[in-house]
Image (tube, rainbow, N blue to C red; front, side, top):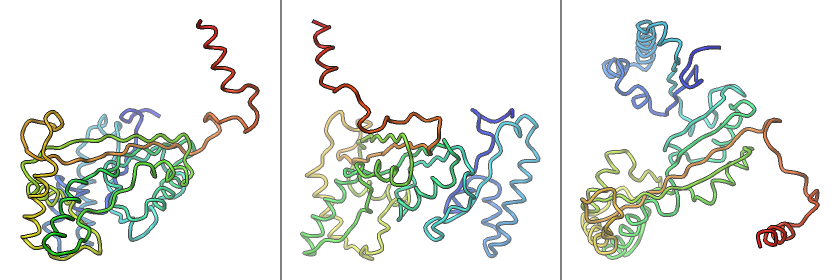
Length: 282
């Protein structure tokens, strides 16, 4: 078949937030004006998407058709697609909000076709917002005599490979990128996190934190984590914040994929090969 962008002919965009899914489109504006009725919102979104499709030229229609789907995985625990639907599943910095990662990866494996690919980037790692977590804990301990979680939990880099393998993926590859960000102070960092919707969402979080605790945490942050020259993205800022992005890829098993030989089928020891190559170089 012809058409598509880079071989992609159909694209399904899924998000748990309908407003985020339709942000910036005409359907988003109509959805806000009809917020009193969910059924009216759905009809309005569908009509506007159909209208936008009708305005497209034949060339644009042939390039790639996109469908936007509102679905909440955490509540349903099942992706709304039959088995073997997609050739490729992508996720970009959103999986850290999933409570049950093993179940999600198993579902992604289910909806992929044989030799299908799962490619993702996920906020995680043991160092993500570690400076902020430490500062808030010390500030709270100093002012209130106890500690509570202020930064949401992140999956550890060493666990991602086993999660992919346990879900049934083959040829898994995992990598991590550590990014140092510069901020004027801890208060600005917390404001940015809140405006991005990335503030603490733990169920057992404290409903209220005193101003004294925030001030103490900010002072601890300034003292313990000053910006080191050359580590930030730019020259502005006096404190640093660490964020780790975990990248991963996994493939659904298929006969065409390379497979390891059976255990015990080797005829030579690795040491013998190394010794022979060393002698030949001399």
